[in-house]
Length: 50
Image: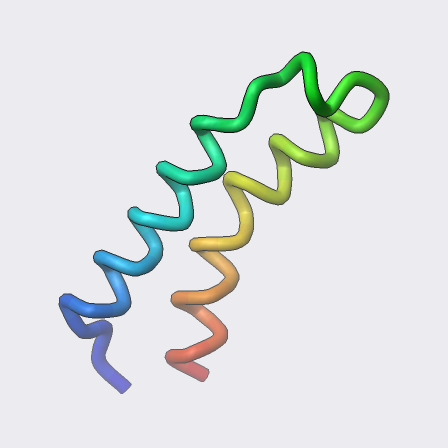
């Protein structure tokens, strides 16, 4: 399955929304939150391909 422009734009939007979160709001779980913000678009794209 090919990656469409729509999937790429959605992944970028989700990534941008995650970057706008303030790290201070994530206090004790900031590392897990940051990992999820970075990993989710990648997992989404590869999940749709498979």
